[in-house]
Length: 341
Image (cartoon, rainbow, N blue to C red; front, side):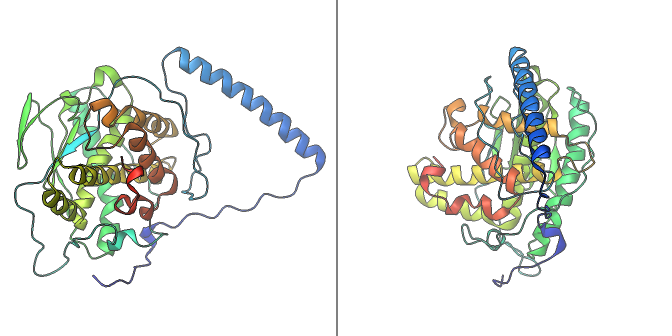
């Protein structure tokens, strides 16, 4: 497509924050004393949460509107087992863009959607049913989440004249399920799975016995898989797999390209939660914070693989998307190798 970047309202510019007014010395002293009291109470709460095994709230500096200036500090790992949220593979043949109408753009670092430093997802209301750790409850939750993801990413991609269609949802119930990418065994590495415009969420892979009533964790991994659909529609997925095939899937270069692809999906997941938290729907600050902390439990350090990125990078790319809501900050294909190891 031409190099011109669309400037449309759904590309999500940050809300402006007014500069603070000057205060008298007495007011400043009062504010400082209040801040000390809040800090002490916060430390007490964190100690209490740690004693019960609950991760502390990790994003004290999060603003209701996206901000590219204020990135919360890294938090210590919350502990607990985990695995990469997903695995995804292509079919043996790459899809071919339609000869007419919107078409994919098979590019990576120079892809059109990654060029505008101000482009992001619009702040929206997303209303989800209360999480229930049952097959039926999970289906209702993820079906509603998919509608929110469609509403977020569809207009964004269509603004770049890309051929957006929502992915088809599937909820396998067996120990394995069939896809165009082959037979997939349900396990901790397949909490959700994407293949060729199809998104699979096997309830048995969600580890609800470990994560319990933590919808933010489940939403983040689902948004990661949906991030692969964004890559598919845009043409990033096909372009990445072409490089992987050329280098060899298990070669150092092939594994690095796989990590770049997976870490970008992480960043897209963070963008979605960052754009929808505290907007009046049901994506709460608590859900966001739980998702923030959970990212450190997932990655190659946990799964003993080399194709998704270290746990630290798995967390850092998700947090980059969540705090800035700028798709240019998700350009893993332009990042140095040290940031996608």
